[in-house]
View 1 (cartoon, rainbow, N blue to C red):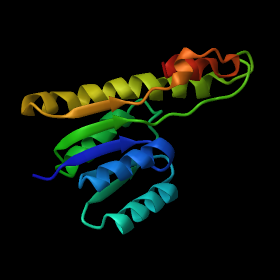
View 2 (view 1 turned 90 degrees about the horizontal axis):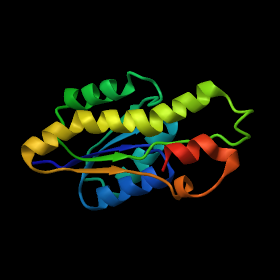
View 3 (view 1 turned 30 degrees about the vertical axis):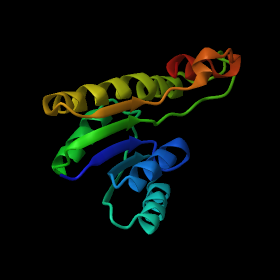
View 4 (view 1 turned 180 degrees about the vertical axis):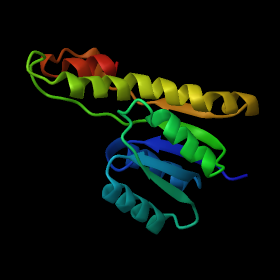
Length: 158
């Protein structure tokens, strides 16, 4: 049976690094991020190094309320039996709390907490029924450090 992992925030940084590690182990990838170009660049780079795996990319804004359901349906449509879920996507806003925009912070909270929880709720039942699966929720040490210029990020990544 093919092994599959879904990685959010996969176009760069920690997400791309995790995708490469999984690819090295022969695990097929379903990569999710905002930037279609960067995501496709990451896909090409990984396939250049590991040509025997399959990679699907999905450009999606995970700050949107319906995004978790849409992503779950996209995975199911491909008939992928997900073995690994890595909730890595995230972003921060720098500035005094009194000066930062609620709309952006609301999206950050939705991404870091709500979408992570919802994706886990959606994919976990199948993993439990198979008796196998792994879920990694990427947090940040910023959640344990005082940082008045990144208050919402720190609180939501703890």
